[in-house]
Length: 562
Image: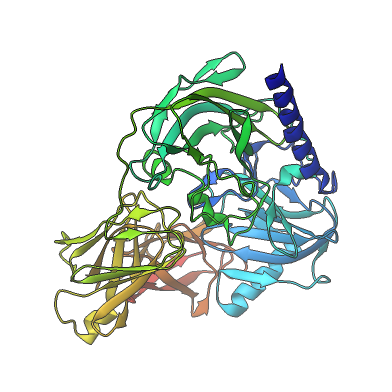
């Protein structure tokens, strides 16, 4: 009876906390930014690559060009046009101290769209980040501001919607603001893991525990561990009536009825969102495509407003008694799930020990091989890491260095570190000008133009993997989808970009000698026909100049009739 009483008090505490969080924000001030019912494809705080999801992804029924309207009175304070990220975005500042953001748009409303287009032609630059004064583009609640789309870093048609504190620019969970999104589905738990915390969560890594569902409660057999210092991680999703896997809003961990850890995703700033990598099992996320969230604090994780202060979640087992473990997950609506298990220390084994190349949270470190050096800041790692760094022969015929192995891609670093590589021979000035450091992350590659410090090439990275110094003399190029001189009757011109190493970092198109606005969509460049090239305007010459990461420049000429 006493245990039941304490449990009821705890549940009331959780529900009260959720209600209070919502009551801190204006209810029903903001309207649905679409003219169809709000349905979630992703929620605030969902786990993404190197960041938490910072808003709501609203479904547009797999369609583009739906009307996007202002969520409340205010003014357009900023727009962005970019290749990745938000693609096309509108920021509206409201008089109540909040700013709403609408992203992945196809088109701004006419007056704003014309302003942006004129500035792009004036600057001769497609990418833009423009701020506005309050009187330039005022909007009223429900006014059309844009058409929805699939631009930028979007994997399908939808509207990304954020609510930010205007002063601090922190993103706040939009579900606190009273939107009508039905949800009576509790989070679904599919996995439990324990970690030996005598050294690091990375070594030896996660130990899986089988989870079973018994009625409305999840259970697991007694967890027998061989370390007196452990922590837990949970694999779970929320559903919110609509089938999509959403992120977990709130989690609590209790041992023998006492709360020892709690996190909730209430608000996050873009400056802090990369700390997500210290809130999850990064190895499982990057290697196994599995989201497991830690129910403990990693020593280098400094995300504000996330976990309850002074509750570390690290369990010190000082006896071999059986201890009760309870995990409670909740969504913003208060739907909850419980997992009940027990933990017991048995047969204490030896833990991992640090090596001479251990990198610790809060301590900067420089590590070297014969021909390479890596310089970590004190904020580089979330947990202790026995860093494995060595050289091996490169398999790339254009490489002018050994391949430098930096641990592996499945462990995270928080901020940028400096990598220096010494070439395997003396390079000429022309060769140095065409040198890039190619970084292989396992699933993808990146290339950064080398900066030279004497005979060492330098670049900065914020992921781990393998790196080598490569000479790139290859020209970038674009290819057209039409035959030279033929009539093009479609709605647009599309050029496909290509470069063997790195990326196309500069693109310039001129139609009959005048700059022409091409949008960049991933690796393609697209011009939508407008008054600059109307139907019936006859023969045209399109000159395209591209530059790649290494600085190689190529100019190509295409002709067509319109």
